[in-house]
Length: 291
Image (cartoon, rainbow, N blue to C red; front, side):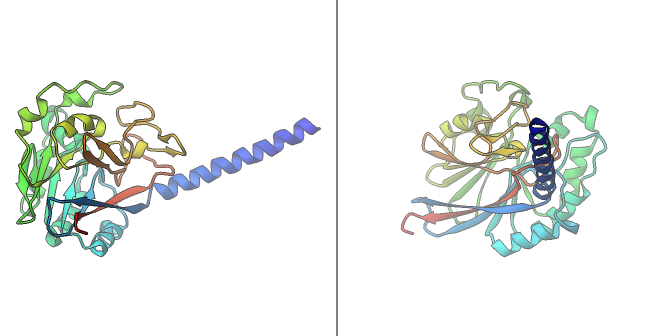
């Protein structure tokens, strides 16, 4: 009887835990938080405030993404940076929700958009995805969004240089991380800017150490979705490459004097759930050293 009673108690606890996890999964898969970072630099003379969005994957937070737009307006950014994977690379996939959201966004703010692996894949495999990428770009043609495909742009007179990196499909291999070839970044990006504050939009965080040796001041990445499930002490459980417990899953990292802010993303794709790992809208404030 005692063993039967113990088994019943454990079974009830297990059922309650499963119900709790299912509730958290539904909750976390449909909410986002604002994660704020404050970074000091002696390269700027005035405060700069921007938002970083990544990995929306055509998700909506309320009709027309109203909840996300309201939060963006509340944060009052100087400009917006996008780290890729806002749409989904699937044959015949729809991107109208994302395009509608981006049109509203770009009507209010200056937007700079670097490609993720989904935009890149849709572009290089037309035999699989048809005109998906071209249709996506055409739909955003008159929005004023500046796409940065291994390109640089200066932000007005703010002494900020934005670079959007698009790495080859070779570096998106599943299960293993391939070593980045020496001189690869210089071959696609050239040399970094001089005394300006250099931000590198680089979708895949696996190569942060390589990015850091190119010597940007700040790297902004996404792609990993926070590891889908976030466990205490262990962090994210699985990366899109299907490697378990990725070292870079979300947060602030530093290598060779360079910082990387890794967003946990706003949407989902291959594994369409989140657990203890809500979406993230990233706010960055760059502060002059004097402040």
